[in-house]
Amino acid sequence: MISLFLDTSTKKLVVILIKDNEILSKKELESINDHASHLVPFIDEILKENNMTTKDINKVFVVNGPGSFTGTRIGVTVGKTLAYTNDILVVPVSSLKQYIFSSNGYDYYVSTIKDKNNLYYGIYDSDYNDIVVDKYSTKDIYEKDISKLSGNILYITEDNQELDVIELIDYYKDKGINAHELKPNYLKKIDAEEKL
Image (cartoon, rainbow, N blue to C red):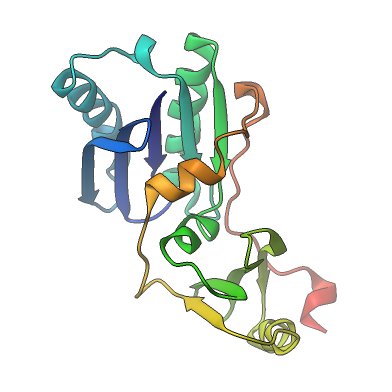
């Protein structure tokens, strides 16, 4: 199976081409407000390097946020287009959840993205199942949520992220949705109730 992984949700643009359990090619670039000019050329370069076309892709994995409005929208739009034109499934991947697959043996995984005042976070169990999904809240509510956890906990932050795309694809291998169902997950404001 040929898979294409796309992440444009942060300042780092990532494009990876995978065949079965092997990374064939990988392109990364840190850019600010410039993912749109690099994403499609990167996909084209990766495919050409491997004597492939978009018709060879069997599944597209797209990080659909939480992330910046423009960056997330670019990846989702290109992923949807590839999936739709090739009549294949697309797999939405949370920008928080994508990094939990690089380590195993923990009871819980807590992944966070900070902004000026608050946190976006996800909490996952030892089988990588969702406990708290892409929640945006205050530090107090975050601490209340993690106080319920016990055991061996891995905390993943923007500073210690490590992507294991092979494990990620293996986890999501039986998942996928129609291209029209893929929706971006933008960074959101806190609900009035959560502020209380």
